[in-house]
Structure formats: C-alpha cells, structure tokens
Length: 171
Image (cartoon, rainbow, N blue to C red; front, side, top):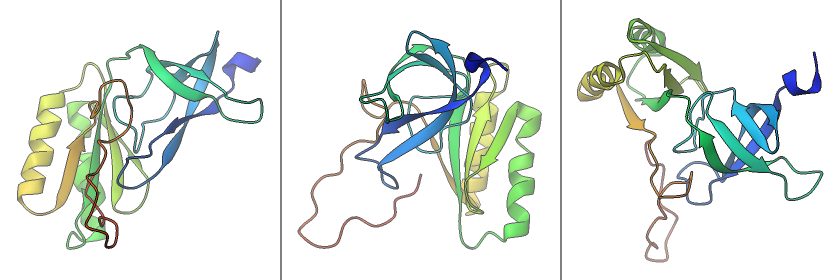
C-alpha cells in the first residue's frame, strides 16, 4: 500500500456544537493538501462521505484542519438520536429499513447514529421515513446542511442568564 492509499485523520473545529468541540474523520490523502473523507461525519455540518476537502496542519504534529470543500461527492448525511423509551433491540431494525432507500448507517453509541445516503439513494424518502419514526416518538433526527455559511459548525448559542450551560440538545 503506498502512502497515498493509507487513511489519516483530518480535524474540524466545532466550538459552537451542542455536543463536541471538534471532530476527527478518516480521510485519504490526495496530494496538495486535499483529502477524501472516508467516514460519515457524526457532528460536523456540510461535510459528507467521500467529499474532497482542503485541510492544512497548523503544525507538523497536528492533524490537518479542514478549511473548505473542494468537491462534493453527492452523498448526504442525516443524524439520528433514539429516545430512551425506544427499546434497544428495536433501534437497529428501524435504521436497517433505510437501506432499501440507498442509506447506510454508522453507530457512535447505542442511541446515536449517522446515516449516509448515496447520490443514487432516495434522500426525501429517508427523511420521510425518519420523520414518521420521529412522529411516533421513537427518535429525533437532523439534516446536516450548513448551519453557518462558510463553517462546518453549529450556530452560536445565545448567552444564557448566567446559570448552567444549555443542556443536551438533540441532534
């Protein structure tokens, strides 16, 4: 395997995200500071499986940081968080039902999943099915389009009245 066939981690800062401050993703180096993403982002917005990004390391010992998307892959990302009331054995079959619509699933935890829809997949159909599951109280889901132009982060949260930070926040 040549050096360009190996996957490395690239990073994106997410200081406004409801759950994390940043995310590292596997990527294939393509040369000239470009990388092809090889996993579905769990937290970043406006990034998708197989997108080609420009990423530059601020120092030799740091992961390259994603600056911009060079080429879109056509894949789309959704995120799913199951409600506590949804029994664990019921969760995976619900997500597996999305496969017939061109979706694949990656799990972060037993409750939180990223859903990748191929360019040929039925993105509206996947959204419709997830919306039906959401209306049944089984899960919550979010689309992963950009929240802030030119950023992969969530929108900044308004300051709270001096108390505890805003809790949770569904994906």
